[in-house]
Each structure stands twice: as C-alpha cells, then as structure tokens.
Image 1: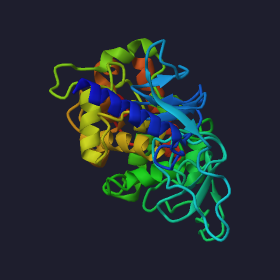
Image 2: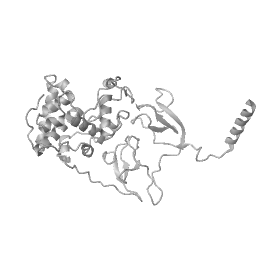
Image 3: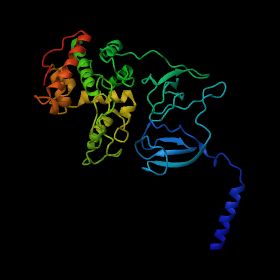
Image 4: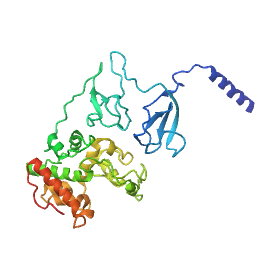
Length: 359
C-alpha cells in the first residue's frame, strides 16, 4: 500500500514536470504595487518583489515580507502587470472602481455612473466624483465621459463659494461635493424652520466641525498615543478592526467602537469592521458628522439639530458635542473658538447668530 502510494506520487510529479503551463496553473497577475505611504487594512493586497501579498491587519510603511511584524501573507509569485493602461481597440476595458482598493497615479477605472476616471494622484480608493483632487474624467473608445459639473447643492443653504470662504485652508479631501452628497442622508438637516434658522443651523454645524478638524485640515486624531484608548471591550461585538482602530476620524472626530457601530448601522455602512472608510471617503466622513448632529445628544439634553431648530441656541450644540470637557467654565477658550467661528459663518451667510451662544 505504501509502495503503491509512493509510486503514484512519483508518477504524478513526473507528469507535472512535463506538462506545459496553462492558464489554470500560471502565476496570477501582479496586483497594484506596494506603496510605503499607503495605508493597508486587513484583506487589502499589494505586489512587491514579483509576489502578491495580503495585509492581515492595518499597516503602513511595513514592506511586505514574512518577517518583522508578520503583518503580510505571501500569496506567491505573480507575473505580468495589472490591468493594462491601453484597452483593446474599439472598446474600454478598465476595471470597476472599488472603494478601499489602492490606485496608483494613472490608474483608470469605470465608475458606477458608467463613466471612466483616471487617478491624478495615488489614493486608497477615494470616490472619483467626490475626491476630484485625486481623480479626473477620462475618455476612451466605447466609454462615456462623466459630467464635470459639480453636483447641485440641493437645499443646503451654503454655496460652494461661501464654503470656500469659510474654510480657506481646508485640504482637498474635505470637498464641498462630499458634504453635499452626505447631507442627502438626513433630509431634515438645514431644511427645518425659516430661512434664517436654516442658515443658522448650517453655520452652527460648520463652526463645530471647523473646531473639531482644525478648519477641515485634520482627518485623524493627532495624538496617536490616545488611539488605543477607544476600544470598549465590554461591548459584545468587541473591536474587530483592532485595539487602536477606533480613534477620532472625520470632521467631527468620530471615536469609540460603539460610535463606529452605531453610525455604521444608521448609515448602512460597516464601520465597525472598516473604520478607515471615515478617513478614505469624503462623503462617509461627512455622513458620520451629520449622523451625530441629527441623532446624538452626547453629554447634552438634545441633539445639535434640535438645539438650533428649537432656538435653544448655539451653546447647546457645544454641550451636545463636547460639553463634559468644555461647558460650565471647564474650557472657556475652546468654547470661544467655536463661538468665534459661528459668528464669522453667520456673517458670511448674512444672518444674525441668535441668542444663547455659550454653554
């Protein structure tokens, strides 16, 4: 029995040695090349030294290998390149865009609107119609050229010009288009009450995210020493993305695993397992801020939306966002910073700030 088995294996090995390489046993194509500046989360792939690799968890700046922190899984040798940059004659043949996929500069994708986009700058899967600094419309034979006009701001009472005036130093990630896409999730946001109330609510929201993000400059919490502190292990779902995965992100600095889960459940996005979507997709980042504004009371007694619509005043929005650290004399300088921004923004919008500005 043993001898027969050995002979069978030997014959199989000999046969394998003379078989020509076929499509089924050829090395798979190399995926997008590894970039030391890119952030990779569990399951994302990169090619390096003619091998494809898969990240086991969040990593940045750790060159793929089987040593070191052992964050990478070697998927084996790869051959050829990624999707060719020149499609077959007569038609476009580019892959569908996928959020969370790393795209080197020059990558071309087909977006969900049927149009094609080319990456002007490398990026970790930002939305082509929102992250316009990273992407540009691309024309190819057999495809369609996507519209270049910015989306309508609908009923949002702040124009793009006013938004740019409010945030002269904002980074490209925090685009106006991303904000307009996000506000669609909550139709009551800045649409309740008189025109004055609508503008006051918009100014109040923007003043608070201005304070939280340093003028729409910071996407993640600066103090990385705090990152491991936001995992409440008492929650039944735990912290599947990692101990340090639930630090502040986005314009209102969404923090804690339970907030990522609650926001994700409300928005229909799995943020508990994919918290980096808040820093990688502008619309998602803004959506988490609008979610908090419309639904959460925080340390206050009302949502920030209700505070503005019911004339409780801007001060109550501060209390609902960070009242336990700032209100009742705890940090008057921080409160004043928010109030100053609110006064400036209401002036830009041509409305009075109303009463009860402090908490």
